[in-house]
Length: 84
Image (cartoon, rainbow, N blue to C red):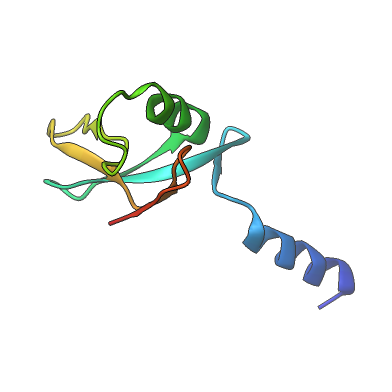
């Protein structure tokens, strides 16, 4: 493996997942277990605008079954780390 390939591989591990060139957060439906990548800027905005309890992570509705989707792993705008 060339030095360039090693360097690319090393940097690839550090970058968050991206969809369309943007960082995403993986959400999982608690009912049907489907996973969806949601842009981080959308999740951050919803987290920031939520007036509710900051101990509860941002949530979305599943487009497949209508169940609740929660982040697999997310560091919120208030510095709280949420994990399933």
